[in-house]
Amino acid sequence: MARKVIITCAVTGSVHTPTMSDYLPITPEQIADQAIGAAEAGASVLHLHARNPADGQPSPDPDVFMQFLPRIHAATDAVVNISTGGGMPMTVHDRMQAALRAEPEMASLNIGTMNFGLYPAAERYSEWKYDWEPAFLESSRDFVFRNTFSDIETLLAELGEGCGTRFEFECYDVGHLYTLAHFLDRGLVKPPLFVQFVLGILGGIGADPDNLAFMKRTADKLFGDDYRFSVLGAGRHQMPLASMSAAMGGNVRVGLEDNLFLDKGVPARNNAEEVTRIRGILEGLSLEVATPAETRELLELKGRDQVAF
Image (tube, rainbow, N blue to C red; front, side, top):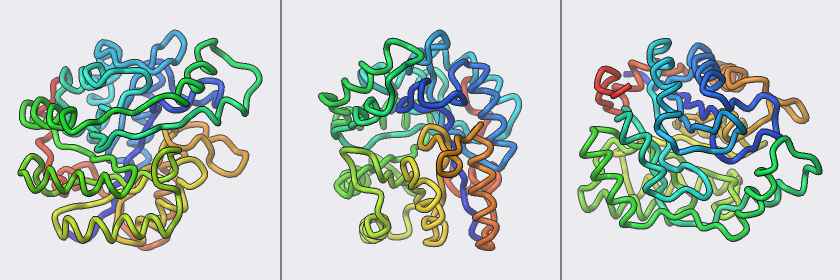
């Protein structure tokens, strides 16, 4: 197959709060609508979190996920990728329940324990849509995003071996690549690995082009031809680092989970706008966008008929 670029769209996430954007999808209907729109715009992978429809707070509840997963599955051929990263202050047990219920083709797997600082965002707002928001952000000052070796082993066994789900391995720093290599050496993960380089989160590696190049060199050394990579650039770094990823032979991730703005000071009104923007950049580089069928072949996924939603 000629090289195709996979576009992942992260639709809502658990980082941004409702005050930050009027366009952040919150309810199951909004999440489904925006996911379907992103797929129609060219995203072949939909990375999904859930939120409490009453107030937008991140939710691990499988019942909430099941209010939008069947609709997305019925309306689009895109690969559904369910987060196991969840959000504060969910336990690892909480974070995996939706994926265990749904048995998706893909799930995210965070590959290291780290600080995860959201609290600087609280300084930008003086009024809030919901009372929970400022305390949620401020609590990250003392939050440890737990992903121990035992946690990873549990996810690989229960979701990977148990459900046939393959993973988007989220690596927030260079050490996480070595952790992933450890699991590859043990035979607990199998190629082709789909590695998401995450740059620009407070607590992880900075969103710098040199850091992205270093991450790729390290992954090349550790994994050789056994991996494919994608890049998540947080906030304003989204499009520049995605473009760099594509030029380096990688794949891209966009979406309102990672960045709320289409241009400086101009909010993205939906996820499809960001997918359309990166698709235009890819086509301007004479690169072809992978279809869902091509993505399944590239990542050796089990197929959409093998999910439980």
